Amino acid sequence: MILGMTTSTYTLVHVVISLISIGSGVVVLWGMIRNKRLDGITIIFLASTVLTSVTGFGFPFDHLGPAHKVGMISLVLLVLAILARYPLYLAGPWRWTYVITACAALYLNVLVFVTQLFEKSPVLKALAPTRSEPPFLVTQVVALGVFVGLTIVAVRNFQVESGLG
Image (cartoon, rainbow, N blue to C red; front, side, top):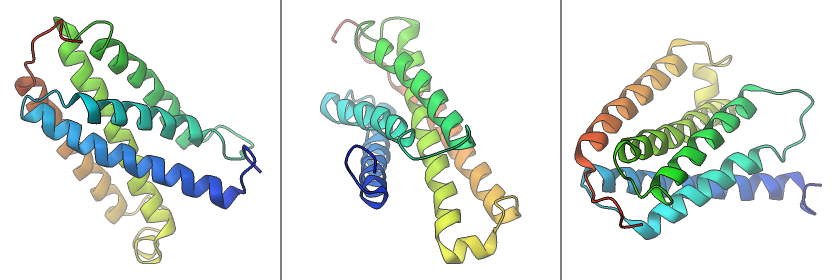
């Protein structure tokens, strides 16, 4: 049991937090593309993305796996995003630092989500049983390309005034 929960309950909580993180992250990214701060949903996105990474370490494990490494990278990105967004008020280079780190953290959540879909969905697992087959690799490359493109647009468009906390 983890935090007094069964593993299945803990998994459900982790998945729900992850879906909230991805959903709110998509809204925040869309807001950045439209040059909107979306302060309330941004707090939900950043907090739920931190929780997603942190709760990922609560599952039993005997070695550090790829998901743990993604979680650690995500937490570093989130620390930078939170610092850039709040105490540094998106001033100067902290604006694009925030956009890039927030988008990268969202991408990493999507990367893990897609990986989990290919692991858990019988149809997708049949297409890529070892996740080294073309359907999985193409999906990941397309997702990366979409996020790189959207991040570039967000960096260009998100021109909010600094100092507004």
